[in-house]
Length: 165
Image (spheres, rainbow, N blue to C red):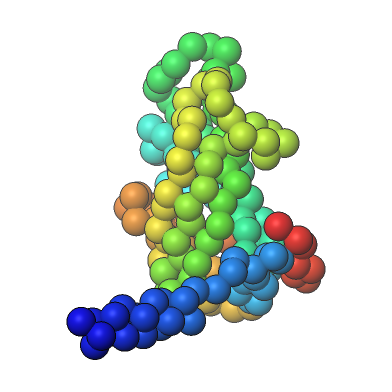
């Protein structure tokens, strides 16, 4: 009985030692990604029924994504699809593992506040991208949910200044 008590006491101490408090500031993120990146076009975009152009702003461990969406097919009301184009916004955290960028966040309003109603997507945004660094200012990107690869180029470098959470 005494040995069992010591075992549980030791187990408790090991578990307690493995616990740690969450950091009170942002993590620095991936240094070479810090900044604003833009996609200018999609290959053969004039022949596609729909396509998306991405803008990424990486700041420390966060990413803010704006998508410009174009479609020749009307998927919703005219107030949502203004002349067959619309924007969506995402605020997320990201992780880079080897060549795979994992983004998980929420769809937002244009000011990146939480979106709880409106057109098209609401709720959780989750996407995986395969990145290939061509130069310091050019990345080749393949979305795991699309077959159309694209390039993004750095338009503005940002230095991470971690903020309190």
